[in-house]
Length: 300
Image (tube, rainbow, N blue to C red):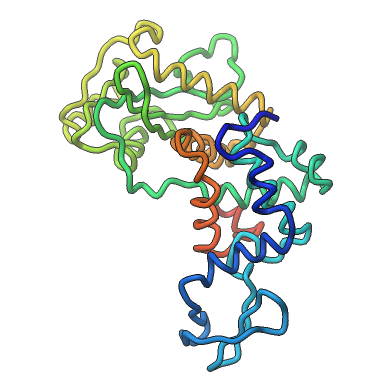
């Protein structure tokens, strides 16, 4: 599987090629700026019973470098877990659970669960709204049915809206959200979360966008001409669909948003992939790993 330039598999293995290196990295990232006990808030500790463990000097609570992180209680080894993260984020087209299971000699279910846990950390913070010229378009994911093309109401397809920054002949960041329908109420969600009110928004002539002009005063509509007037966003919609079909073949409709978050986390950092792993590990260390039940809850 081809990887991007700047962080080769060789460079990655040199940094994280052993369990010891992975644990040392997590310990440094977690406690490099000082220890704070999660139980009592005390800021002094000594070595715990095991290597890369710390014990609070005040209350005696012991904590490992992996506790409260994505890697807590990983049973197949940190070296493999770090490698999975690398392949999920930096392989050219991503990695599905079947391929990960075969590569790292774990069951597909184990690879699927770990992959789903990684996805929970890829959601946008919403702190970086799209600015400048932003194209917005809605589409459906699913197999087309005869006589039900376009915006036909059917439960067999997932409705999605995408927003994309357009910078002349190039594109900037983008986001996509699963929506219930193509009404103004549903479409408004991506505007509120990901588009600056100062942005110059362009959409096709669909009537669902018209009510949004009261808030987004720079929103203009024009005929799509079967996508000819919005070529950049239609290219990205096609790329997204090809990625879903080619890499994952199929995903349950309740999980589609997580796959969209993964795709656009990678897409929006395509120019900074050499530092993507470190930035992602910062997220892994900021909150505990979700359980299987929590993943199911997030999907509903």
